[in-house]
Length: 289
Ligand SMILES: [Zn+2]
Image 1 (cartoon, rainbow, N blue to C red):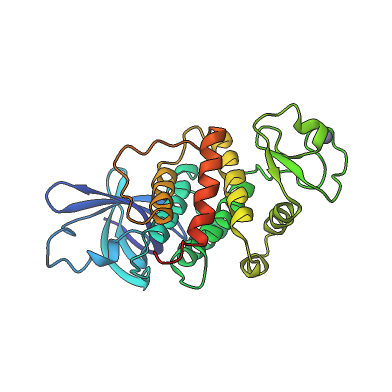
Image 2 (tube, helix red, strand yellow; image 1 turned 30 degrees about the vertical axis):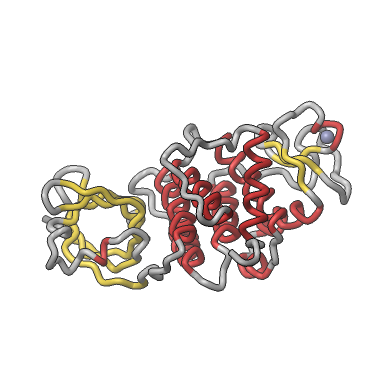
């Protein structure tokens, strides 16, 4: 079997057979590939930790006969920090699911690879807010998919937007002026602050974005905007969003353990309002808890 080496990060993995795993790996030079890692679930396997989710490693692979290549060696380039913060892992899971969903196999793209690797690192970085890092990643991905929103002129009537509140419409493809927004009940009200952050993200300056201090209300609106865009452009909602939101609810209400019955309410107005409240409480936890 011909062999090759590449750097890659594990986006998804499922157990297979008695001790194997099938991995979805985003590689730098070969794009997204399917890989079988044989025997990694045996206790003595050296590859086990190196094929964990979101681990970035230098891989040796053999071309398989079918869809899957065979992993023969992996040397970690960076391991995700093993923090106890489940929300960081949940944000990383959204990055991974979005990447897996939107990219076809075997289409290498240096820019996307760097973006994904940086986003996964940012989600695990204790100095970064993982939700802000996730918003950045989602915005960059949406732009790369060719759906960059219109942020300076009204996406309805094309008039220049004044320095004032505007409304984001995923269906219209950007911000709407007040009169156009009256015809779009799903449009999301965006403060001047939110609009400035959206424009900064559109500019693509990662360092400038990372320095922005996003208050809870701004971050919450940004999340609604990107989720509305993803819901509009992807045919199915990302499942990892539901996990993230359920965790945020738990964090917001310590001591309350959610059952398995969490139902996504992102598309209902009342659900969004409730989520906004949760987000604020999470950033400013109740004292004494
Ligand atoms: Zn307009």
